[in-house]
Image (cartoon, rainbow, N blue to C red; front, side, top):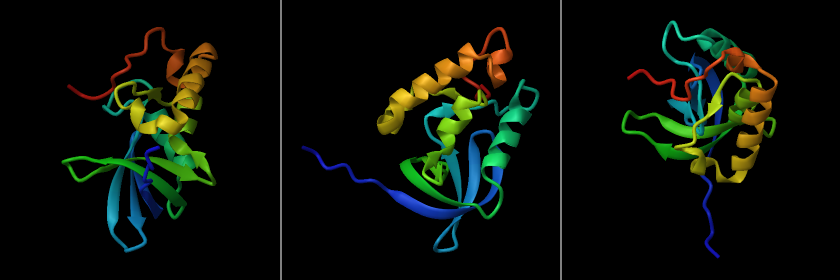
Length: 145
């Protein structure tokens, strides 16, 4: 049996950059941008529900909130990608549950422990027409091309 090493970072929220990205300060005092793993939220100015996603993230993670980040990868840009937890709850999953984000199927394997929860949360939000699921058609890729 292979032992999986978890890379956990204890940090404090500095701010919210967009619906997918937060900025934290780690215990060493270093400021780090964190891209939320396994989800996509509207990022481009003018996209429907972009501001709602940002507002929801700001509600969940006000400045000075202590968080635990399960790091999944490092990007060339210097961003860390990870699942963010507050009080043992995944903020990434909460965004999907509320319809403020969709599951990013390309990176979902990075959230192997909660993969099924992400898919169920998205299906429930879609069925209830929550958040961005109020639109008749949802583009699953929100990144600017």
